[in-house]
Length: 178
Image (cartoon, rainbow, N blue to C red; front, side):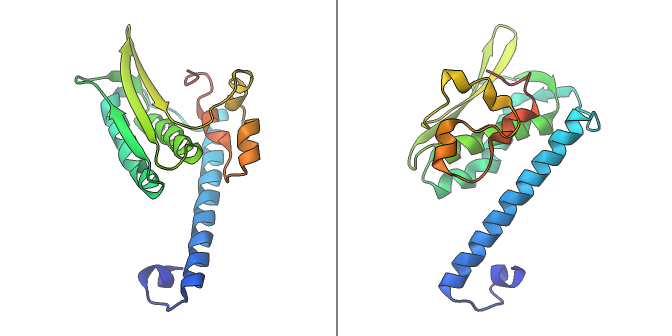
């Protein structure tokens, strides 16, 4: 695959497309395995979260930057709605970023091409709220609690037959339910 990626191997356009599918599939599989390992470590208490002072503006910006190529590939637009000022929280910056990236990834996956996806950071009382709004079909009221179960997929998403699982909500089931 390295030779194909660097152009050192001459392949027909059809073979290049097939190699691209293999690479995408292996990246999805690697992501799934890494997510499962992380989740298992958290559940077993072998992965400690750090609780440092974090500016959520930085976390939101890094998450948006990391997912930008996804949106470009589907002609979607990511709009950041982040007011001025610092949004300080105590948390694990890497895990917070991972949660937002997962939410953005799902928004990309389940929203039609050419649509707007919003990543918003707001204050409510003494809390910092982060939200993702997309143009996807959404989740029914009955299924909202179940999306935090490991491997659960809503009926709509099971019918879509898109790759991946909705495992990503399971990381922090009690902290990110809004």
